[in-house]
Length: 560
Image (cartoon, rainbow, N blue to C red; front, side, top):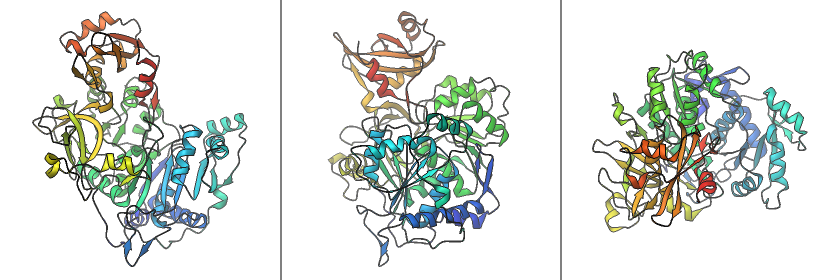
């Protein structure tokens, strides 16, 4: 995508030391699980110790810089450290430390199966694997797997919450690894930093993996910095801001939505091993949280908790929903508490903070994700890469210096997602030779006459009924307005007359009948959009941070 290639500068990767110099006594990180609070001076000292550990383990910039020039983008720069852990201070230490050493941090989801993890670790090929104690048996299954091809040092992080300790004891974990604390040097003095450029990788964050084994997305120092710039300028973040970080740190939301932008400013991020809605409510009040970003399910659960009405939310300047459409009924609950809640949009491959709501945005735009941020372009394109006019639905494409560089060791998928068509050449259908084109999101969207963008769902989720395109997200929005519906996913099923029709899979009051739902949708949806079948689930399956797993719903209910 956008090239930042220049000679190395000392400030590239100098996150913790620069921040420690500018605001040493400001609290950068709060660990709600242990109650520990860390200033930026303390975080930099911890990063120095961790950097020395990484160099001892060989996690460095293995190719570095030669004659003042970085290696090319298709060469492998930076040894990798993989992590299997919940949110904890050591992940922050590793982020700051890999920035210093020129290494790459690759956090992995502990929710994946051993077979999936072994494929990903073979791909990442880490020099070091760090495993939190609750997942040592999972790591042992990975190490014993017949498909394992990687070989690396392994360190264990002790669980520091009582529930996990009890769980580990009860399970009688069969695996033991060298303790992190034993390997960590005592010396916290400044370390010599590596020569890295804005184009060198710093984070590998994997995709959701809904179509197979997750792909590792390569985020460079430049990608991370530009997303931070865009978030700060578009959302109006401030040094005094405080946020509970409810996204896991193996997810782009755990780093790029708020954590790194707030670190950039010297603000405060609150983490915990587990985040229940009641805990989030408590932390908003006890820590005086000023900004909050969460998936719709978490925002909804917070409004339905017994503590909702009594929790002081007055410190929140705004809240944002991400990771899927937020129902307007949920948004209204937050508006009634005088919290400015709006929808965001992003993906691991770009941003993820691509849109913002303008000052004084009208409530009738609540279904939109807003307008593009300062340093990002967005368009809606047809299958030939031609930009569509306002009002028409096509694939959302994004262009920004905060886009990821590529997928790791996956040229075919990289070309499909990142090798877009430039706006000037779209009419001819030719590729942009500089690869400075558009990131294909796989999401359908439309733009209105005022420049607001609306997400219509995943391109692969659209189906055709009687020759008409049906976008499940639009149907779901109307169904969700029914008082008996808590959550809904619409999937296509085969139909002899129409080819395909919709089935509404509902979490909610099971007294709801298809006839009742059809009557409710009369006048709200065209007849061909209304579901012809109805099914119920006690709880929607999820993947990632409380994000509905649509593919799991489709596998179970996509037949009649």
